[in-house]
Length: 195
Image (cartoon, rainbow, N blue to C red; front, side):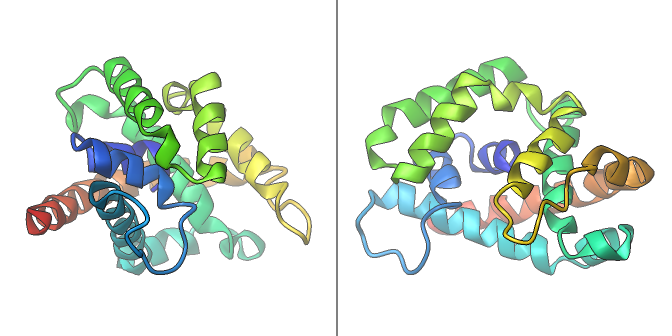
């Protein structure tokens, strides 16, 4: 799951939403340095990632990719799932998608002082370019993958991400439709245990 899915799964609790972003940047044990609600959001983020990574469907989807790319397929799957969430938004939310994006940006802005510097920078880029709104455009997925790949030391495996994704697009969409209701249910139970 990438940002859109993490935010949607954390919604509507503001602390969980903020933790959904911080969860990508806060490593190690949580020590009370953040407000409890945001730490719970980081825990939810980590739980979603673990649930996703261990799900048998993810192993099946990774095998759909050619061998050289299989090692990095999880990144492409995560990005693709945000695209399909955006495309099928009304199946998973009663809120208008643009209103949801604005609400997430507002929650992050109100809590910006709690975010680590890398999360603050990501939030600024996300809002400046309306990344949440752009997930509905397929072109955003290979472009984002290529930017992520720039951070890799051994060369960018995603320079041809569009071509690499094209043969598996339909399978990714079917995988999303199968998987997302399960992660929604997982998060519902996780959030109930927080209360």
